[in-house]
Image (cartoon, rainbow, N blue to C red; front, side, top):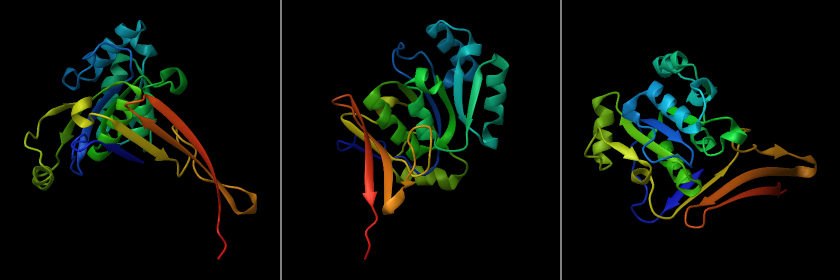
Length: 215
């Protein structure tokens, strides 16, 4: 996957973790907030949607670092969708809960992936916040070299990705967002890709057929 924006439109995120929170379009700005905590965010989202917290589904990466997050989510009674990897697809899934069953995304994942996900949301709508997480002084220094001066800053969607953005991805293995590469008879392979653009609000799915060249 890749994201393209005008010069300066994408946060130069260091290779560290980022705490992320995302919901889909159609809700008041600021409905959820990283500083409010998981339980409060689920309750606020449920009230805005007009459902009980038990009817809200939150997507979380299945990692030991999320044990406390998962415990707090369970205490409020919401559903939890654990995924083994691919948190960019997890964030994108919140834009169509009727199709994906996912209302919110929470948890820590790669910071560069957070910028990719933000670029996708800029194209199709939604809200997202992120905050860089540092495990040691080496990661803090890496952030400073990337131009990050406020190490505790809470980034909004447009802080992460602004202006006209393009997001594109092609599936390698099967996932929630895209089908992976498939081998067909006669040396053919099929791929599924998605291309989005913020300025036009378009989402295109591309199904490709490729024949292996014989040398």
